[in-house]
Length: 368
Ligand code: UD1
Ligand code: UDP
Image 1 (cartoon, rainbow, N blue to C red):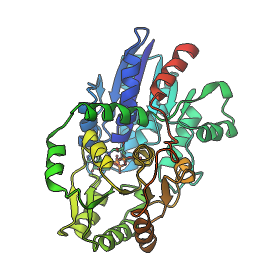
Image 2 (cartoon, rainbow, N blue to C red):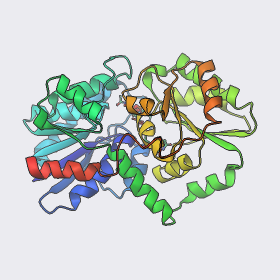
Image 3 (cartoon, rainbow, N blue to C red):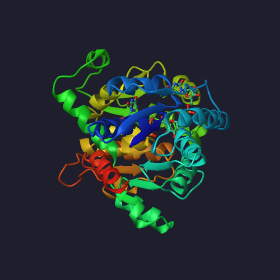
């Protein structure tokens, strides 16, 4: 059976990497990879670390690309890939423009689609934008749905998806995290980790920050930056911010946060360096989906700078806190959480046990 994995951004690559390696263990599968390269540098960092060489690279990224421009490029370029590869099954991931457009292109060719990380919902078209619609669209198209949590699978069932097409697997991000932690525990290091070791004073508490959501561009990002500035007045804190390459993020963050002694603005980190830094942090402030899922494995609380999250499990388990873009809320809750130490017993990771890829592969073996 020929299986084509198709992805394009950093988080999709991280979450598809363990599945790629799990599928490759089985002789029954011919595994091929197509990257749209909706992201370029941030995708390549992940391909490099997880040793994935794509069979097809659509190389679509443009500076400050528009959603429609990106979508149309992916749709038209996928025709050639699907004609040439002629797969039995295409696996897409999550809720990006790549996921939705590849799923649509695959459906147009009459080929089956499997959706990894299926069923996440806010049921609010504007938050996250455009991801909520991307995943709903992908969910309508998909023939098989690999849900990370019971809640996600229930969303799909309530939308009329057949029970036998849905399986709860856990999130493959936990598989990726465990693979990476194992390497780090076995002595993996690189130039970036060594640089950070020399640069950060770990006697202080570290706050790690990321952000990239389109619905927060402008005022939302400015408020988050103001909150970071306020927190940075405490000189016993070190704030580390790997800034997403989206120009809408770069502009605001570099303008508002450059030149402060205890705020370190850096390029996006390669995955092992980011995982290593998470493990050394006391608090994370982020709008990232993936980070909400990873942080519980380190017992590090996440302030989620979004109005809505599809990842309620972490909120309910007390691992993450939805704070929106309200400056005083961010500062107040951050200060409270910096005093708190979560324990692994009371807060197990609600997103997976590191065996999601194995469960997805078993389902494919038994059902296709
Ligand atoms: C995209 C996804 C979002 C996902 C996020 C993960 C969509 C609509 N958005 O958002 O769901 O959560 O990735 O990070 O699918 N850029 C570079 N180099 C890179 C990556 C991005 O220069 O390696 C710059 C380019 O100018 C690019 C811009 O960032 O045009 C925006 O990239 P895009 O993928 O459209 O949006 P993201 O904000 O990255
Ligand atoms: N990440 C990374 N380097 C960074 C920031 C994040 O490798 O500088 C990883 C992080 O560990 C997580 C993923 O990228 O696995 C999250 O990506 P992002 O926040 O861009 O997208 P989202 O998860 O929100 O779709």
